[in-house]
Length: 110
Length: 126
Figure 1 (tube, each protein chain N blue to C red):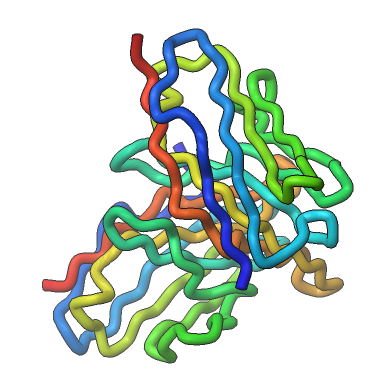
Figure 2: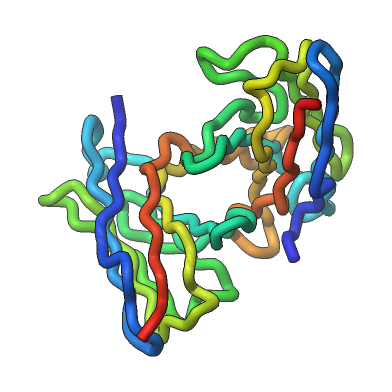
């Protein structure tokens, strides 16, 4: 069971906007920032968001991130077929004294 | 461009020790940053295993701490993972990655693993 809670699945049609949530506690998301990864089948995770809402170079601006209290969200607008992947959140946990991941959300583009 | 590449046995016998190495190119691990290992059982989520600072300070996932050791080999610009008493539950893709960390007075810690190696699948079987 992961320290951070994500919905196991999400879906949308091409062009839609979808949001993936990541819920934690005061010792992790509540006091630190969140990053997000996209993982395509058979590949290593790819960083798509850091420090809550900062996009690495090359990540489309269709991807956006936010944080409020002990929860964070990743939004994908203008959904495309190539966005179909697993998405993971990560943050620092003050009690664990280490990084913690969410359980992952499988995004399906219908 | 920083690149990482894992290496090690793809098959380990139960109760034996797993030894993995991560070769780093494009950056000297002696210079800075944390370096770490993450694992992912096939079809499941990501789990942080261990992290080491360029100075040698180590951090371990409490659930694995009694069995895991991470170390640096600065002359070879690589770092390693040892996991003892392997069981079927340790079957996973093992990734090495650089851990970037920043501390903000108002936002706390910002951390992310980037870049990652391609990963190596480790199976536990007799």
